[in-house]
Length: 481
Image 1 (cartoon, rainbow, N blue to C red):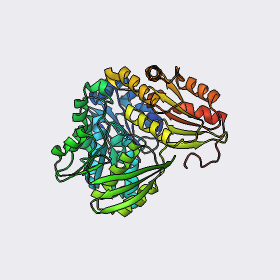
Image 2 (spheres, rainbow, N blue to C red):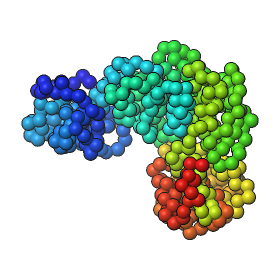
Image 3 (cartoon, rainbow, N blue to C red):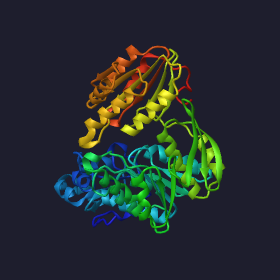
Image 4 (cartoon, rainbow, N blue to C red):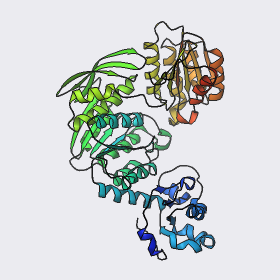
């Protein structure tokens, strides 16, 4: 870690480390505690104000941590409190950089392939699908927990290899939200053997300024891969396709509209929770019954398929694996209620393309429904164009044969305004997700089909929670079927 520990207790060198922790509340006996402070957050691309964890060093050691990693200048500020436990402290210039350096050393010792995935939308789903496909080939796969895809979550994921080095491959999503070369830094920790780019969309544009800068930031995952690696690229997104020129090895493409190495054709929506398509590679074709809906999820499945194809899996193996995936929580979950209505829970995140894709899924799958209802939270991090994008998205929802739109929080009002201007009279604004949940719970009727979707910060899962509080599901498996 490039650390300095002049007063360290020599006996610590013989201690086994159980885990590496950045939250003092999670410390257990045998852990090493990394005490983060505002300078590290600022220097490593994290926005906002954070607690100084140096104040928790003593309590972490009292809970059984074997050692703590502390910024040298923070120790000097807290020296009166920490001097008596200096024999258990490791001093570094930057605690986050130290954590990342340790993760890189563990990765080098492990020394097996890494699949890295980025994109403006769909990273977590694509990561889960890719891991599932590779596990179907018999590989043991390390993957990020939840969406731990930044400069802290990524190294903490990699450090799991210190406890269990038996993984055959790692599938790691890499996120970014600032111009501070976050993906480049993550690639330095674990240089990818395969770099996957899903899409380039105007997400985080408020921090990066232009779509071209977002493209450059996402391209760092291709520039950072190993010599001789494989870039897996979306052929239907021209900004992604252009990244093939940056590959330090070969490129494998996936897509629906444009010719690609891995393609989906003959796409048929067969009902909520099932989309059928022909998976086509240069080696053959396989009919797939895919348990997720929406064009964006088909693209995620193609990215996973392209990784499997790049690693030698047959189209039949890949097709069988895709047919057996389960919907990740809050990403297209189908909830069927005993009161006779159906809800698509896609609360995990949102952007204009993904929202409109799921609206189309709602329309395609609800023939015979009494009403089609969309509950859509404001879409965050769209920059200066956010009001216009919300208005235009509202107009497109109104043109999609939807009966009711509930726009939630902030720019959800512009969604409603756009829908009303386009002729959808039953468009309602709710100040927050709690209000939207109460409104929907009072309004919903037998025969309705509802889509709930919103950016994470809007917490549209609260809408689902209110429905579950008031109504019973048909059966315990409803959320998975």
